[in-house]
Amino acid sequence: FATLLTVLALAQSALAGVYVTAPVTGASVIGGQTLTVRWADDGNSPSVSAVGPCSVDVYVGSKTSQFKVQNLAASVDVSKTSSLVATIDPSIGTTGTWYFVRFTSLGLKDSAMPQYNYQAYSARFTLNGMTGTFNQTVQ
Image 1 (cartoon, rainbow, N blue to C red):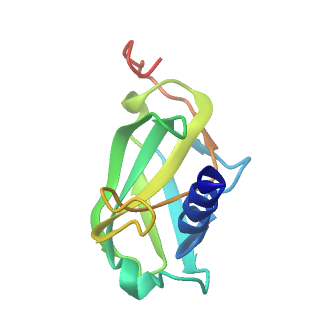
Image 2: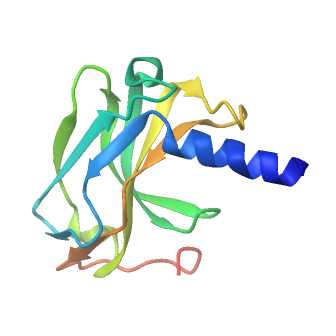
């Protein structure tokens, strides 16, 4: 029963606050071109004003093992704007469907796991025209 409560708490924290509306599943961006990231307040706790400034980054990996491959914005206040545009560096990895955007609050801790800062995720999307490779750790 305690495990079920933990899973439900984690699911709630993963679903609350920043709701990433772009990129979506099926989106495709070409390395060297721009990626538009959009988000909204989902109306649940925490609010985007509580989340505040975030680092916004492109990641690859799984739910438990994630690797940052590009910073898109070192500090963007998700309560003061709802989008950003950044150029994808084609050398960050290989062409594929395993990329996602992760928001990491610079101040707010995750309510279910306070050893970590609050995080929100986009859907996975495709990067084409990529020229880089992944090291053994990422592969």
